[in-house]
Length: 200
Image 1 (cartoon, rainbow, N blue to C red):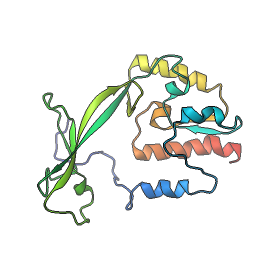
Image 2 (cartoon, one colour; image 1 turned 90 degrees about the horizontal axis):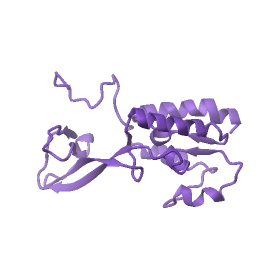
Image 3 (cartoon, one colour; image 1 turned 90 degrees about the vertical axis):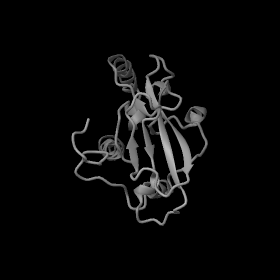
């Protein structure tokens, strides 16, 4: 609930995205000569072919890593419906929430408002309607934080402690909701605590 007209999506004092987007960060990271990128490859189809002594940073769902031996964790996911609308400006803002029960989508995104400096066409605009869905691991986005799920996750956490060469992280590996700044902080902390100690 909001009792004011603050249009900010978050309440953090500093908000923003990199000027040239997040893609440039990952493009630079992945260009390192020690990194080989495999596209359209399911980790579980190649995991048995990886050198046993390799240190693995796994950012997928922890329950899938352990072949669901303690059961599946519950997730929420999202579906996006793309639509081109024949107006210059559909809603006047980048994100509009729709909390009404009778409306099936939870928000509409209009990307043109994220970059007011760009020259957009006046004849049409692009919008995305966002629909919430329950998910059982096929396309996980957000953890469903219930006592039952946390108890199951704790069993997986105990199991991961038995594996010395695998580092779990990210939203899926930690079964936690992270904003981008939290993801970066968690990754840096993991590096300081774990990978750096291994002399990489």
